[in-house]
Amino acid sequence: MVPIRDENPVYITPWVTRALILANIVVFIIELGLAPEQLEDFFYTWAFVPCQLTNSCPVALPVSPFPEWITLITSQFLHGSFGHIGGNMLYLAIFGNNVEDCLGHFKFLIFYIVCGMLAALTQGFFAPTSALPTLGASGAIAGVLGAYIIRFPRAKITLLPFIFIPIPIRLSSIFFLGFWFVMQLMNGVASLNVDAVTGAEPGGVAYWAHAGGFVFGVILGPILGLFSGPKPR
Image 1 (tube, rainbow, N blue to C red):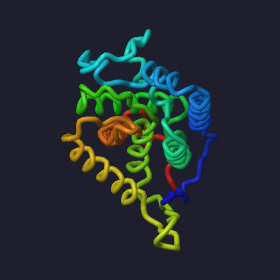
Image 2: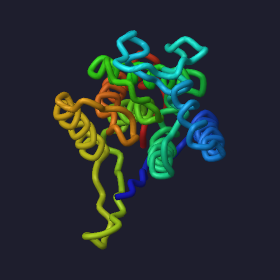
Image 3: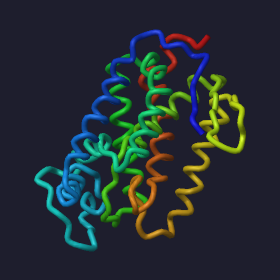
Image 4: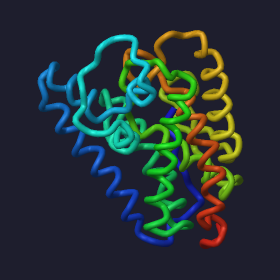
């Protein structure tokens, strides 16, 4: 299903949201130009690998010339497939503009990056020995969703089903995003018995990063002034 947010006009031009989308697309285009071996090295250099942060890797991995904590930021701009980046950028475009409107450009950028970093650390906490790269903007965008649900709980989300149901479905954001969060939490609990749980790559999906990013978005949004911006109509 494709969500479309409506009934919440944007009051300012969401320059940061657009810049983040553009940056992710540019990096993905760079990835497409790399050979498989180069792409693997690229991911191990710039993606977050939990076991490298905790010095507990079960196998020898390519050595990055940069401190591992830097990948808490750089990993947010890496994606593993067209579906991965397409889904993330769709959600960012739909929900990021109103959150940016409430926080302002600079605070929204700080909010987005910090949510992504804390989301990656959450995933690392639950999978500290994982040697597979964690990559993608999902954790940061989950923070945006967390802020959105508490700021615009009654905003209408229109779902456009691809199959099964031929007509659009309209739900309040508190139900749509609330259900999304519960699913991430349930899948995260289920993944505790899985050996390899990473980003949207063959190792699995970083459900704990999604859930963690969402929770931190709920917490950080009000701290940064989420409720001091324009009131929803």
